[in-house]
Amino acid sequence: MAYLELRLSTVDAGTQLELVHHMPGPDGIGDFGPGWEFYLDALVASRDGTPMPDFNDYYPSMRDYFTALAPAQG
Image (tube, rainbow, N blue to C red; front, side):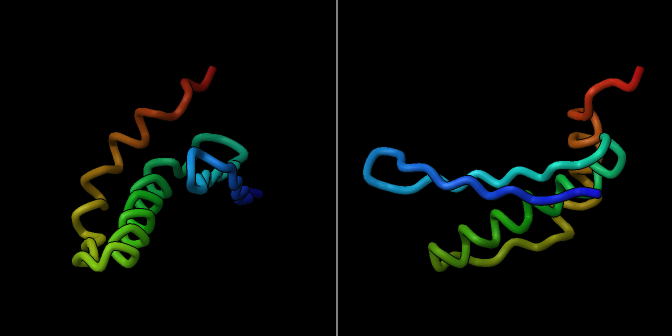
């Protein structure tokens, strides 16, 4: 089972949000990672009033990058 953790901390005069996706293993990281990138960029675009990103720019093109971040199985 995977679960999400949100951590808020004070940084300078603002607040830092850290999102942690706890997963039982590296399976699926290549699918989850691009989604997180997309949704966080969409959050920034919404806040800044800039154009929304297109998910097709994130997946599947970023899948291999995130898969490579997974720790080696052994």
